[in-house]
Length: 285
Image (cartoon, rainbow, N blue to C red; front, side):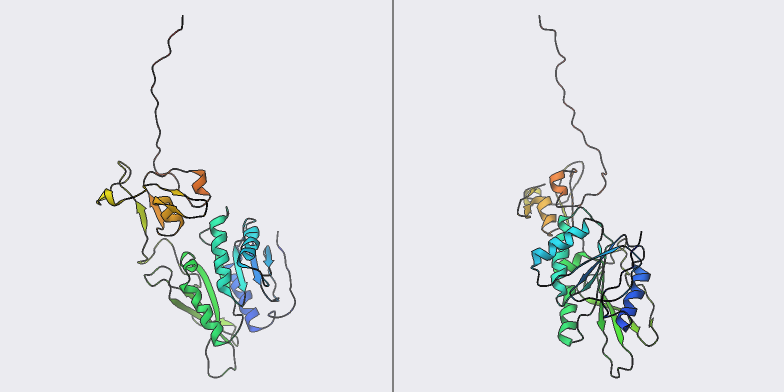
């Protein structure tokens, strides 16, 4: 099933509208459902299922609730057109933590709401947000600096997700409105999570034989498995992961439902069981 929808004219035949149409066809054609987060209407045709959110003057909690509702329906790729894209990233992070729809390959495309230098600098600040450090597939479209404006040029920018400096912008390509082509024609979602290229992965763990053995002073390890509190904080391995002190936890962890609400679990690696031994029953005279 597909929907073709045209919203009131703003970008339809404009250079930015043409660029967006090309990006959707190339990178979002197989999206199960696309969410448009639009403060202002835009005009383009979409041949995939989509929904849209209009975040006008909503608080962060209200925007989070709106995104949560559509994410739980499977609409978890995003095109964002907002004057404050940091607000979207903060809400998106909360949705990722609360929701049952969990995907590591979500794509976010952020459109330029303004050509002002202040907005460009504000948008580049997205990459230094804590919430952005967990998102691999984020593409920022910015107006390129140019001396003569015979054609419109747009920079396609992401962040250094897989390197040590993962809060730095990575300029991938430019798009020229005169040729309607990308100059380098590179992959605009290049981060392959199979190779993190030096990105530091923090692991919470303690010695628990035979499952995990650490060459550390175990007296320094506190709270062991720990727990997650109702306010979203916690202690031990579980708490360390939920508050982002660690990226993953290892040490005979089980698929506990209460923790699954807050965390993702890998497939089980080892089966563990407890055998209870009791005397055989005797006949009562």
